[in-house]
Image (cartoon, rainbow, N blue to C red; front, side, top):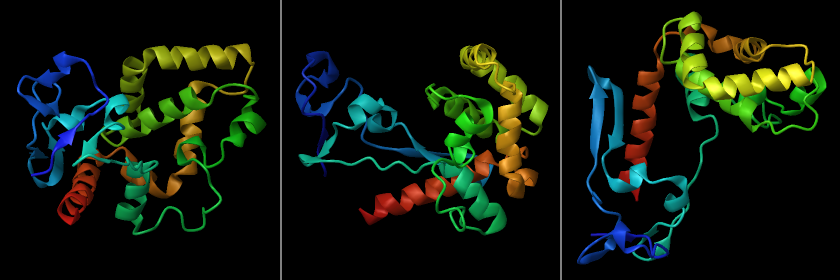
Length: 212
């Protein structure tokens, strides 16, 4: 019976006529879970409107007129894979690390590759994208092929940065360093395990939903 709405949206086209509290045309308040093959694969929640909201609008959502907070689990699937495969908390012994997708310490990019005054976000985005593709494919070559196609502009952008800085690496070298950094889980990466990790994160979502 909760009312979910966006009080800061003024565009009337974003509201269903006669149902002002329910924002966005086609708003859906029910969810379904989508599994793959069996109940141990997949299981994420889909179809309700707020799941597909852009980040811009999600931050404005209110529930019963109370503002919400969106908590981000940094490098969630990478950390889940450590927990699932090794029964290990990724952060044990790594408390000083800052970003798992940037080899733990972003300053490595400056120290080892000469990326002194550039935005590290494109590098992080590509490495994260590669990992997410890698856990949903069965070989390294296949994963590289997919990321070069899906993130072609980003790949070319990083190649240009490497060329302009005469950096002692290639884009593939950066991805290989990420794999080396995560050698403890290397035997689990190119195994299509992503669908199992989705199941685990869907169970976390389920616990949150039923708790609140």
